[in-house]
Amino acid sequence: MHVHSMARDFKSHLHCKPLRLTHLMFADDLVMFCKADPPTIRHIMSTLTTFYECAGLRANLSKSQMVVGGCNPQLQEQCLYLTGFAETYFPLNYLGVPITASRLIKVECSNLLEKILMKVRIWTTKHLFFAGRALLINTTVFGMINYWASIFILPNSVIESLTQICRNFLWGGQKNTRRPL
Image (cartoon, rainbow, N blue to C red; front, side, top):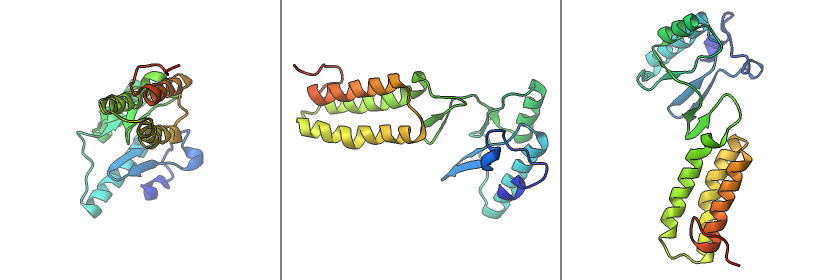
């Protein structure tokens, strides 16, 4: 990717240009950023072909998607045609978190809330003492929250919901009970 991103006619995404950010990669997940520009798309596809020729690994077109925005429908169709990727829209998931073009809203955090609620529902079936509930919250729940919070600024309403879930579980051993007086 680096070699072709240095080409004169490679056009970076407006918000990625100052950082010279062209892609993010973790294991076999790859997110690429560029301007919706046919020569730039051709550079990317050429790089993926070169990678395949060197490493024997090919992008799975049935799992590959493209978000195209801010351009006319004709250019959008041309970009999709050049890649063979399916079109998708924000938010999309990458490494278990939603990627969006703006700040996260509560509905985009529903996956985090649901995962935590699922864990708490399982834990409420166990007869745990206060210290056990505190340990589960500190290790598991806060770990999940910290992962998301290290990537995003979580909306206040989500933080309040998470706090309520943890507080109710900690003090009552349930996901929906209030703290005893």
